[in-house]
Image (cartoon, rainbow, N blue to C red):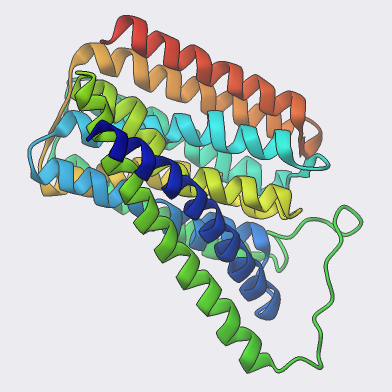
Length: 327
């Protein structure tokens, strides 16, 4: 039976990246047609779509009475998004990814504030329903900030002129036909990503159980990696296609959503309790890697191979620490 899990894992990986390819084409196409900045598309729409697996797995885990998996999945996903997804995007992109530092300063500050706030909430080992509601209220505030940022200054989410090349919309192509095509690619891609990600999680969990790995470790590593595969595949595909803005927006948006949306919803379904030892290590390390990622993006407003390699290093250290000290 163990061989079946490994085969399912390998096949799902191949299908996942093809679905991510469709997803990126649809996202970029819709942003192009409706003249929505790609960074905003990444932060809001792609972020919501790619964190759907985390939400599904964490809420289900909370409902079934597995809080370690819920919280571990959310925090582990942030670390994986930054240390793997964003890192690989920087490493695999043909040229350094241009970062909109105006947006980075605001969204980055909000992200760090949210991470610190969540750490304060969970230091007693419990995230209550009321605290979950507070996190969801902050999520609404986050979206309000995004909308106000765009409305207050038109083009705020766009890369300044001269730093990027925008493709001209082909006026000869039927607008309605292009919209339908982009919507089909977007929805088909994300549905495929979610389904294949679920198969990957199923395979990985069974492999982990076969080798007698604890639920906490499963949540922080295997499930976190599994549910982060949409972000990883989307960021890598976007980078390879020269759509770095989508990759940056996706990771920034997913990081915020993992804390506010995933932990918030899970706590509302059932209060989360977690071991103090896990909290003392995972949350500070999450804040550290988020800080390193934001600082890397802010330096020169570019993110390239060396900075990506630095994040990979931090992720490897994280994995080693979890495997050596938290088992």
